[in-house]
Image (cartoon, rainbow, N blue to C red; front, side, top):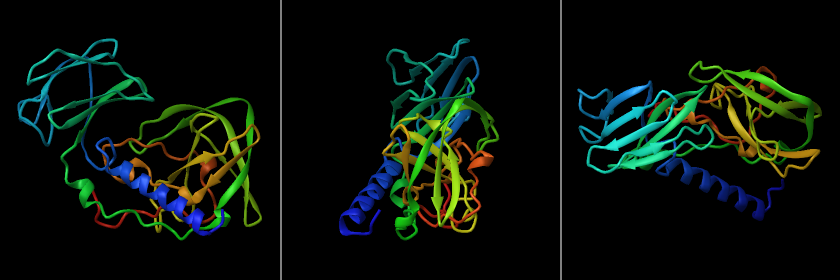
Length: 268
């Protein structure tokens, strides 16, 4: 990376898209609740007598039924046919009802109902994300090394929910003359996601760690641009469940690039 006008404009555009995604109706700034589901029939709404009580919205939003096989139906209180929601870990199904965006999330085979308020003032009030100055030396071209066989790993999360993942590759790179590696624990070999923590965690960056995504992936190489290291969803809301870095992704150096931690006092 060079800091010429073209490159800076590209990074500014990336930052603008990142902020727009956070503020979108399905972003991370307007979440208002998350409730685990069990098999059965449950009323949903802001009224205190509901089985699932929401902090916003109509007194009775509708009725949710989770079947024994994990499939879910939702019948809006305003009327209409039941809407079927089939669990999908990678692409959680969504349903917009009375200004609330309902999302069926799945972890370890267990479903949860996550709700976003599309009229929430939180996105407009969001102060933005401070970033480190651009560091050309922290855009690295790494060796993209496939393991002899996929490795099963157990990754902890921000909610102390251990999850099983399968890792197929690691990136090996050099910073300031030292060799480091990161294992891709999410995404795909063609579009990998790295969850990492470095020595800025806690003072300058989010304590649990950050995410960065591989770019320009070939069979043997991958670009990791730490200038695009981002805060995980759990930095913005308590209603997200984020993977934590495995031990091998905790770097013994300061990566002073990418997003910094949110201002003290920001909470949602």
